[in-house]
Image (tube, rainbow, N blue to C red; front, side):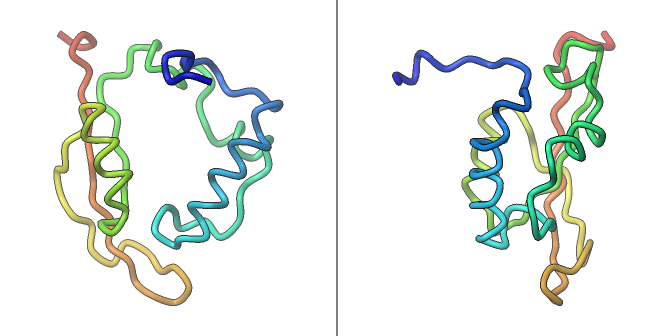
Length: 113
């Protein structure tokens, strides 16, 4: 597959094995999520708003929290227009250790004007 062949589309249950493998690789690093196991597709689907999965439903601001050690994720988010707006100190424990997260924000250029 060429990089130019990639596109964005809604995730389906058929995508779960591939998405789960990527998610579990992130869990293994202990620098990608507070989760310790990948959720089922049904649990993931229930926890994400269906109308807002491709930024086409009038969302003005997106926020995300990223571990400071996850430099690859930070770089990717910044290339996509996110900016660091602060640090949330000791926001949660992972494997018994308090962790900080960086709070990032991306504002829509078209919604809310």
